[in-house]
Amino acid sequence: MNGYGSHTFRLVNAEGNPVYCKFHFKCDQGIKNLMADEAGNLAGSSPDYALKDLYNAIAEGNYPSWTLKIQIMTFEEAEKFRWNPFDLTKIWP
Image (cartoon, rainbow, N blue to C red; front, side, top):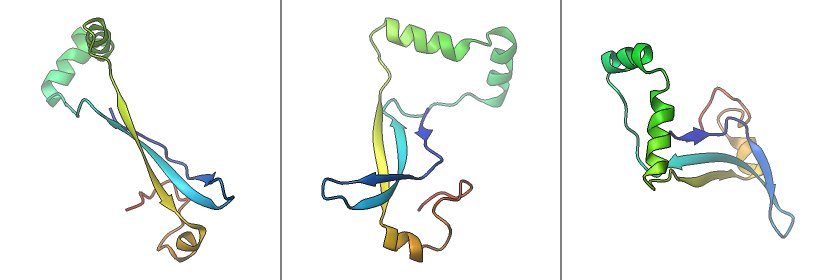
């Protein structure tokens, strides 16, 4: 499962220059989904299916991993941006 930070953060580099930043954790295993009927059946028969799947993968040495990616926006870019970069309902392009 990918993970996304909904909030915008401020980072400062070694020279003291600040930028706005958004964090994204991209799953290295890829995304796999269940069909709706299969998910419905598992919800009733094995509600811990995802937990067991993760446990079994780790037991087999298939450790989950993610790649951290960031988006950077300067203060100047933020002032000119088409919407408020702190708006939690928007995704930066």
